[in-house]
Amino acid sequence: MSHPSPADLARRPAPSPAPSPAPSPAPSPALQEAIAVGVLSKDEKFKPTYTWALLLSRMQPEARLLAHTLLWYARHSDGHISPAYQPSVDALVDATGLSPARITTQLEILRQRGWLHLGSVPDGPRAGGPRYELTIPVLYLEQVRAIRAERLERQALNARHAAARQRR
Image 1 (tube, one colour):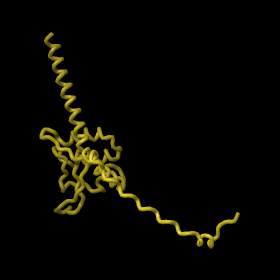
Image 2: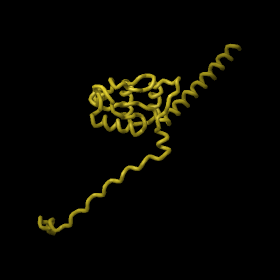
Image 3: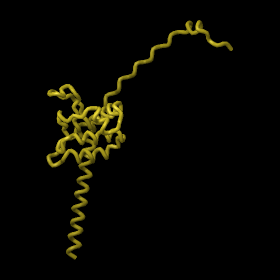
Image 4: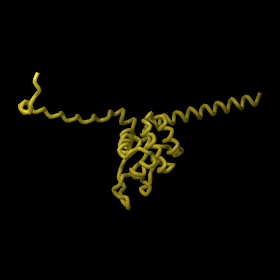
């Protein structure tokens, strides 16, 4: 058995080019509907609703950690983060302990799953920089509302039972 020589390698045909990766398929209409931005009612506060929804989401811990960290920057009522308080990737690295590459990946995961809208700051000293806008996907907003309705119903039932016990 002989070993190939450089002359043998030169006679080999050139390898065929690797096929280009297929473009990722567009999300199905059902998926698009599930991750659409949910709209809060006037009685709902953003931060507690977002927190409940994140707990229901079953996302990876790093994505949830980043979402909770961004929530610290957001207004309580609507989840908007002021252009003056938009965190940099370095600030998010310091706050979470994740690497810059992990932060970038988790931001994209949050965006793809409907938890974050990424834009750019339109004007001011941070013009052109990233602008994060927290959102709650419709699917999880509906789940949170169902849990709240069930809790309210249970509380009302318990109150009726307590009132009936007192009358005895």
